[in-house]
Amino acid sequence: MTPRVFAVFLAFAPFLAADDWPEFRGKDRAGVWNQPGVVQSFPEGDAPLKRVWTAPVGSGYSGPTVAGDGVYLMDRGPTGNRAQLERIVCIDRNTGKQAWAHTYPCAYSDVGYAYGPRSSVTVREGKAWSLGTMGHLHCLNAETGEVIWAHDLRTKYTVDLPIWGLTASPLVFGDVVVVQIGAMADSACIVGFEKDSGKEVWRAFADKASYVSPIMIQQGETDVLVVWTGFRIAGMNPANGEIYWELPTRPNKMPINVPGPALNEDGTLMFLSVFYDGSRMIQLDQTKPAAKELWHCQGINERNTDALHSMISPPYFADGHVFGIDSYGQMRCLDPRNGDRIWEDQTAVPYGRWGTAFMVKNGEHTWMLNERGQLIIARLTAQGYEEIDRANLIQPTTPLKQRREGTVLWSHPAFAGTQIFARNDRELICVDLAE
Image 1 (tube, one colour):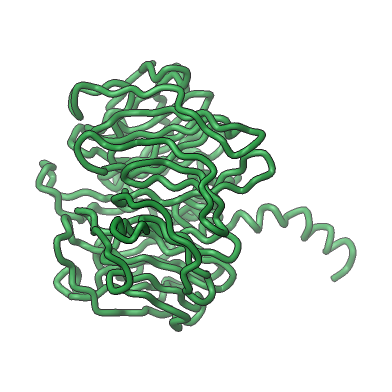
Image 2 (spheres, helix red, strand yellow):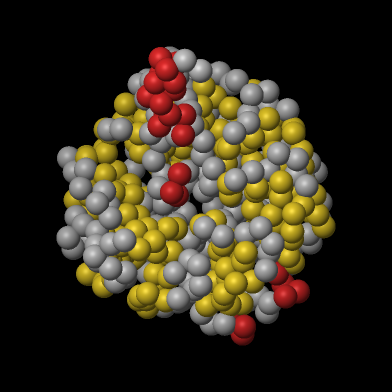
């Protein structure tokens, strides 16, 4: 490589590093798509956006992840939820052909909306980690699908299975993979395993599980694992499970925290939202691992809400404010100082219990995939919701009796390079959004 070519390579290295979407909600689980050169509007007409490829998949809620030449997801198998199995599937990113699939027996019991796995596959260093609905934890060779190690967690721990199964995507940091399994009797709601061998390293909390995937933040010079169980949110040492700080979030009715914490631009604030229990704002110390609650705002119930009662849609910060989808699909903007509502809008998501849209930040724009399978470009500011354009992306296929249409799309998409990858219960699609 000549010096000039090497210099060009270095100049584009940050762009190349941002090409993947290797875990739930992308790099650092931040829901940010740092990709220039994407379209600012869609072609006219109601026809779905043109696809690069389409791949058949089975049913499930598992959002796709993208690493290298692979697109990864979990499903219930090609015959849908009638099959008593789960699969981890890798699709070739360039062709849409199946590269490999690892299938294992998995009968669902006492799981609501049992259409398939919930969590996303985490890919790093040539390995892929997955957590199934009933507690099957796998580490696979990401290129071949070969099993490196696996656990049926319900045979090793007294797992108190949540009503919608285990949903939190595995988090890999350093030498440890962290999962939330809710083994109250074993004081093992959160467990850290050696990522390469599967040996348990630490366990923590006699709590019921929530549905929230763990994240990593930095406080001062310290890397802090943030876990949000059914009873508390805590900052921990990911290597050994040491608890740095914890705040109680015990629910009034049941653990139903699904969307994870949202962080503001400078990492000083962490926002939480729960369907029944409303909103909390936490202040994060920037010199050391420490945290305190600033405010908690809750409505009379999930219909008569204050601030934000989110169900599935992850809220986020933009323009110095909090944005999110409330319990019946209302998009809201909140004042981060006290949770006061600045505005509400019903344009992006149709009215309905558990109304859902997945929001991703790209520069000044917010890209959303709503539960009707529509891809939306919008601008969210304290002044209001400004929709720039929308287009049909993929058909919603998951049955939901609470909808007049009868179906929803509740799977987070992946944005990698200039492409979006989205799935329903029949297909995984790739659409190029380059200008």
